[in-house]
Length: 262
Picture (cartoon, rainbow, N blue to C red):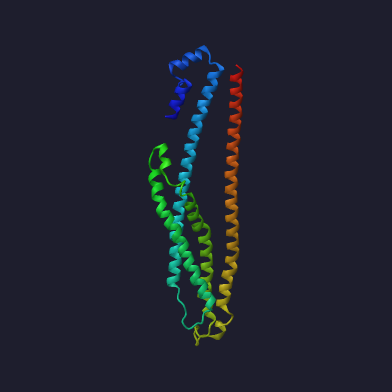
């Protein structure tokens, strides 16, 4: 073990309850031995901090993969059901750009979510297998560090791009569903004309679009703000860690100078 080797090289025991330490404490610890013990404690604490950070990254990657797989499976299933169950009015002449946009949006939506689901399905079992092992050093066997970019890609496809496409899918579906209502070929000829007037279908589709556009803008703003806040939090935390390490380095350099002077 690194601690045992370093303890042997520094000629100090790790366990303070040993007779040698008790005897040295009774006689009084000199400055050189105090610096050596402080250095050993610093190395040991840094070792545990690195292990804790590695396990935190592992659990975060596992949570992202699970969330991506659940979200992608749910939204892609809804998109497929919407495409299959939508009933096009054969008597109504749909605008060609509307049908092309609906077909393209549905296809891209399903493809994006299935790609995110594929990444999650391939990487998640390997991460789960390592996270269930109760061994601190087993975190190095997980592929989450090497596959970090793929995990972030699946997370972005599932949460950001996939949800935006799903919002666009809802808008297009509303236009396809409500637009034929105003057509005289589709509506009942024997019904009261006063009840059929007023462009109810066009107004319904327009209202859904007016509602969904601010929702999409708010979603984009929230996504950008969330990621910027997360990046700022990570940056501040790394700055604090660097400052602490810099202070410890200055203290150790001062101790080394004191030893050289003595």
